[in-house]
Amino acid sequence: MDTEFIYWRHRTVPGIKVEEVCGAEDRPLKLWLEMAYQVYCENGKEVYREIGHYPSGAPFLMGDSSRISITHAGRFLAVATLPPTPEVDLAGFSQRAALGIDAERADREQVLKVRDRFLNARELEMIDKEDVFANVHAWTAKEALYKAALQSGLDIREHIEIVSLPKIGPAVPVYDHAEFDPICPGEGRVKINGEWEPFVLYSYESEGNIVTLAYSRRCAKFSKENN
Image (cartoon, rainbow, N blue to C red; front, side, top):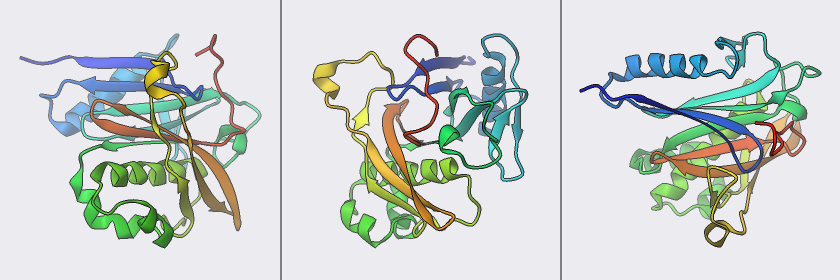
């Protein structure tokens, strides 16, 4: 029997909207991804949404001035969105619209075999070589930072650095303070035009995946009343 897709829209603790699509595990992966994108596009609040891509490969919403970032891991699709920033050229980097998202299965052991390809010497010392969760977490941080920077030719080891990994926080702003306080964001930085640009890292778990957001402290964010 076919299972259904599950769509979820929520505003994360940092004030960034994330929409997730999962479910329908019986569908072939390629078909699943095509259908998951369709589910996302059909769940715009007012109109059907269309996704385009800049020459760099970065995604955008047709006719919309909101920055989006997309990730998928197996049968899990997530799209992060900032509020509209019509004053910003979304084709390039701007602190006002700096956002990246990445997700990966928390138990993906293969990441241990390639950790020296994406972690620099300091990061290799910082992250336990036998801790699958921590290494997957680091991978999502690196990928989210890469997407947020919107720069071609970046070396993931040398030009993208994890200063500190965030504590895994809750997916939504309403949470058990006894379990999650204090929520500690992480820090990362990317070398852009020869200068190190700082970013905030925020992570949570969903459907067996680690999901990490990388964003500028100066980026637009949703208020509690508007998501």
